[in-house]
Structures are given as C-alpha cells and as structure tokens.
Image (cartoon, helix red, strand yellow):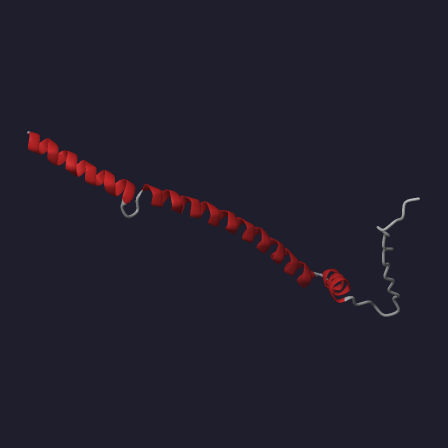
Length: 99
C-alpha cells in the first residue's frame, strides 16, 4: 500500500510540474491571453481606421464635393474666376519691454 501511495504522489508531482513549468503551462497560457487582448485592441483600432477609409472612398466615388474639397485643402487648387486670399496671422511679440 505504501508503494502505491508513493507512486501516486510521484505521478501527482510530475503532473504539477508539467502544469506550472512545462510546455503550454499556466504562465504560458496567461502570457498568450495578454497577447490576444493586445491584438484584439489593435484589431479594433484598425477596424475603425478601415471604416473611415471606406467612408472616404465612398464619398469620393459618389460626389464631386469631396474631390473638390481635397483639391482645395491638400493641393491648394482654385476654380476659374475665383480669387484666393491667404490670411497670415500676425506674430505676437514675446519680447515686450516692461516700462
């Protein structure tokens, strides 16, 4: 009976060792869970970016207003017979002399 109990304790110890320190152990599982959570967060950000890009491409396909807006903002283009005014803000003098 003692030999059987000792054998069971040895098998139990080996299983515990494998559970905590072996391949695919609990710490490995927890690290993978963290990696999955980080990847899901990254995927969610990319999904949001993709939605914006799809909306932008749909807008460019369907209307000329978006194309015109991009041409004006990004390329600085203007229409015929249109006057372009650039307003440059005045620089503030930070070196004021105190009386």
